[in-house]
Length: 189
Image (cartoon, rainbow, N blue to C red; front, side, top):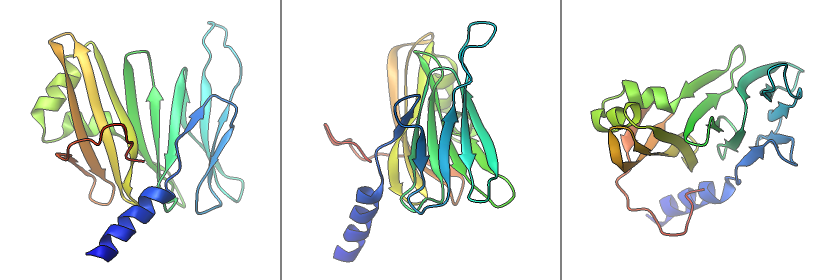
């Protein structure tokens, strides 16, 4: 039993704080080395909109655009560096989190908002689709292949608001509710 606890503590300690773009830091290297996430600022466009390009760079020079964002994103690598999350703050009231798995030929990008709306949890899916303000945000890696994420929202047909917590399993491509009570003042990272 003690050994399992130490493994979980190792992964929790190995996960770094998310890197926020745009900001003073321009890259988020994978803890395993080689891969890195960077952002490019092309400046303000003709319509006055600032669109940043988030890119995944591979050791051989290959580069994939993984997101275009207008506000801020937070990037968090898994403890092993085999996947990472991008929480995109689309507007003041809307956010989505993507789980991205780099591959030798292509990069896999999964929207946790889409997984929620197509999943087997009708309550959270309904709340997400009928609220005026909804945010799906990733808040840390629980294990190298499990991400903890939160769905919060208010307004529309949900005036009292809602708060759900889930765990996304990359290996099985499923989500499960996280029924553990949150630790006050402590992040899961």
